[in-house]
Image 1 (cartoon, rainbow, N blue to C red):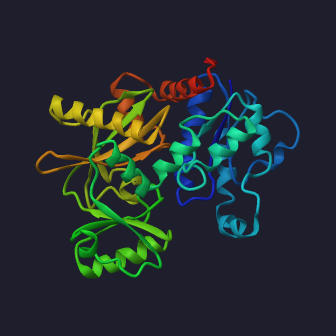
Image 2 (cartoon, rainbow, N blue to C red):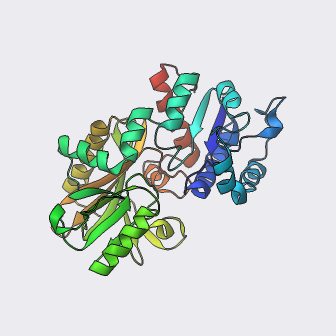
Length: 348
């Protein structure tokens, strides 16, 4: 198959996206596909003519080309009106499918998916509407509550809102403060004092105009992938210090990840059922990953759903798949295969 692995972009998770895209592209080429790595924002100016889907392709060189633009990103975001980089739409239309390796805003929030629907481009993952809902933590909570998926209590605040006190909104310290639509735990802090709460608000508002403040759940953290309607083995995430923030997610050796998680069979099934219910609540198709907390009384809470979760070889979903005997390249192919089902074609 001819596959564009779309990565990079303009979000705070640009580098993570490049790592994901590089791993996926290498895995797909290992399986015999003509996969190419493409930056959604900077494109590939050298592809004005000629064929790029070739057997002779250097993935690392393509990744280095993408990173060469990192220093110009903020300047380009201000100057540019067109989001899609040179040749992006042409190459994506020429591919059999686009593997979405984007993370964060302008990639995981449904905007690119909606554009691709209009262009007739096939892509991996769920559709634009469920992507947008899942990206918005406030909407996610509303849908979870409507579908009886347990989730921490919380409130939504806007930048110019006068009353952002805790008691008036049914909350008390400690609380978790997070940007409403961010990813990879960027901008998320735990506030245990009034002073920390004020600083947390400033931190979250530095990323977005709307934030979510929710009750802090003291306990164990887990994640569950749902692929093709099937819940995968539960994985436990235990940071050696602090919580599962951006540093602990991507700094090697900073987190202990156990899969299958050490849970009773009943608790495992309960979490997996809530994970599947969460995908239904948000209308997610194809695949996703849902994050959970479990308190000291073993009551579980679903925090959020990730519609384009990290897919480096050591990311959480590949670890869950490995327990089932699925290699990383096989998993990448599987995500393509189940995504193609929405187009009613079986290419693989």
